Length: 116
Length: 112
Image (cartoon, rainbow over all chains, first blue to last red; front, top):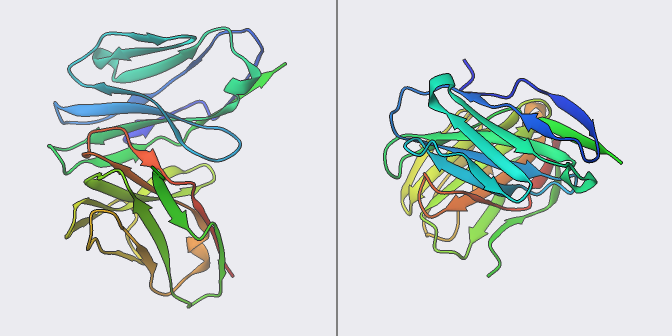
């Protein structure tokens, strides 16, 4: 079974629309960490956010916001007023395990295209 | 700081050849890892290391070897390349396994 599921393979939106990228995870650990990464067309992987399992507060950073809900095992990412530069593949990831011996699991990614 | 560096950027191998992908970081990170990225599959963990002298297998370790003799370097060895190993390989590092990882630029490998 997939540890991290990103059911949306591809999404297209028109510039200035809001878009939410879904991420559902599966773990039995009580301590775990969730991440979002961006991979623009140039190919590099850019870290966006890290959340630990004990902090369910939503986070906002400019046009980006994240909604973490343990009850539904979800860590969704919303881009408000999307821009062409937001076009990229976005990956959600889970790190589980104790202390230093963590394994990372990435979702299959959501490819976002923002149309001008 | 150079961050995480990977060499080479591109490589073409014939089936059965061996080679080593190099990865180095200058951030004094304890945790290093190797991933492969294939279309529609996301990134899959091959091997990881929590410190010099310690390595462990990830999701897809078969056909690959690693060693970690220093904190800075974490090479990935393909023992006998197969077409199924055609992929983009990323090396990453972080202070510990629960911190955000910094990724290298990737190596695009083609096995004919």
